[in-house]
Length: 115
Length: 113
Image 1 (tube, chains in turn green, purple):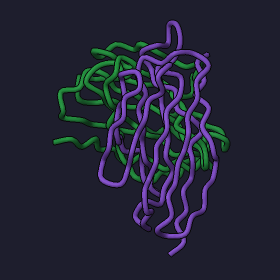
Image 2 (cartoon, helix red, strand yellow):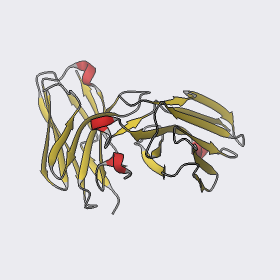
Image 3 (cartoon, chains in turn orange, purple):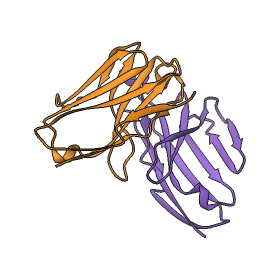
């Protein structure tokens, strides 16, 4: 199974809402990532978890809060977002930290619209 | 931080023509990866290059890693409509971020039938 799943596929939320994005992988990977991708741009790294511990937080605003409940699951909690946060949110996983030459497997993404 | 420059940004080709996208780094890369993202889709891993001067082929796709490990290219022979998408190269970051990938800006390929 080389699949990374993400739910929901689409999400529309108001600026006062609280919502969560979910990601799951069953490949035994120990690194998991959240990326944000705006239209016509490359994926932009937000957070990296390695062995269920937060390794990297790329200066992401606190209205985005990641959580790694176990080695297969990754959540992204959203609160008080701004319209400019509308984007495709991609989850990815790799055997270990990817810069050490491990490919990343991406989920299909959650297309988020903030109204 | 580490930057991987990718050109061209867009390429329109007639079906059957060849296509090449190039990546350049100002510093030596330990490895480079290539991903393809179809319209409306997510990035999919294509290949990883590690050795200086390495050349790898996948059917009509040829990937090269430069001798100095500072540049890479992806060449598609006789493009087909199924090749449409954005091709990204990605290399490790610098310093403390060396274990995360930095993506190039991508080359969007359009194929005219």
